[in-house]
Length: 432
Image (cartoon, rainbow, N blue to C red; front, side, top):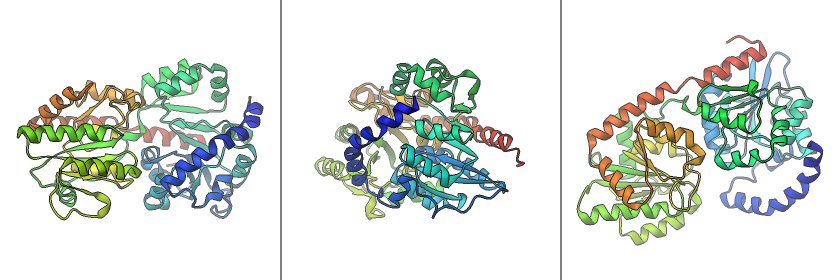
């Protein structure tokens, strides 16, 4: 099977490369150390030590990176273990530089999954273990792991509805992938059922909880929250609705709600914080705000000089912190033509009651758990949006009760990191 993949990879890669290059150049940052994409790591890596075990961790983007933050700290504390980290997006690369570099042996771009490139990468990195986050199953990469007799851990694995449908159509391919994976950790029984249904062997599946819950709130005190709100142009009495990782059409939805409540003279203290999923949409969203008649400013301009109705957070990597400025969250990519949903984790850690549209398939298990706990609600149209928001925005004691319950529930979900770390130590036979 790998033979055919190797033959097809190069023509397929050449076919999609123009589109890929356009998207990446538009977002910026992808030309830095571009040679790493070709497996050239020798200038970034110290020589392998016989006294240490080297783990190659791959985390595609920001979400995956943050989910292993606690694990990276624990691995750094073990003198027998060193970590080489690869990522695939420019935002994640920047965050690694700013927040995680001191915890790592080195970090770099993930190489192309092309036979000579991947062979070169493995020759330079020489890992003793591979740890993949979420759903990154590259055939050549896995083949090289088997050739080098290196165990592969797939942690926090999940399947979107789309991936689930695709994998079910190719059971032989799934069984081939499964032969190269040593251990798969899953956040829930629902995800475990999906992996069994696509043909992954049951003996390597373990339900241990979601790694993404294992982190500390980035802002904890009320004073820190107040300072952040003032920095954004919100007063202490304001009620802030935050649109988290919004997609086209969802900013208009939230602006229309704000217009309605202002026109009716209800809830005059409501403000709006818009955080588009892609910062390069800043001009598109700015045009909406120009036409809205509201006072507003861009987060990229620094601190607000006066109080405003709407803040456009057109920066990257700030969502986790900005969530603490809100009182209620709308989760993007879930309404209208948008499909899949964005991660509600940042809202949960900030203790925010949540609403979202009916299209949360990428985070179906987490969304269902939040709904069962009565801390999140699905809305199907603009009328339901207004109804739910008015109910939550108009009742401070209800919001506070939901927030307290949510924060306690989040603490109960923690613990996956310890289980993965224990399995790594067992694999290497190293002490704490």
